[in-house]
Length: 120
Image (cartoon, rainbow, N blue to C red):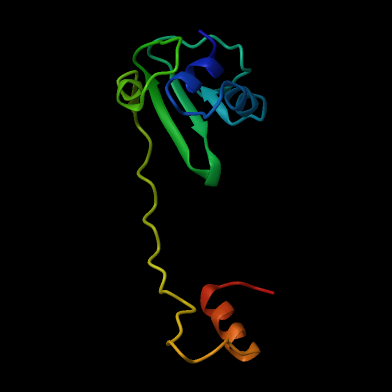
């Protein structure tokens, strides 16, 4: 079975063409090798898919399926060996103003941007 089709059917890629583009871009590895979209994947292969945000999913193929299935069924088709996602940073709510204080001044906006971490 094609690797781009498999990663689409188990919901590691949103579309088959996105899975194909990931293979062409070098974001998919099977057993440590960069592969083309038409590479044949087999039961027992380790598939590494680099996703948006730099997160890498490491899965071992348990079952080959041809059609896209729901998430509960898709999880049964592979063993997920991915590292856990990094914890989300707690961000203080910036820019909350008291009622009735009017519009923020330029100084207030700069302070809110500094708290949010925006540069410019």
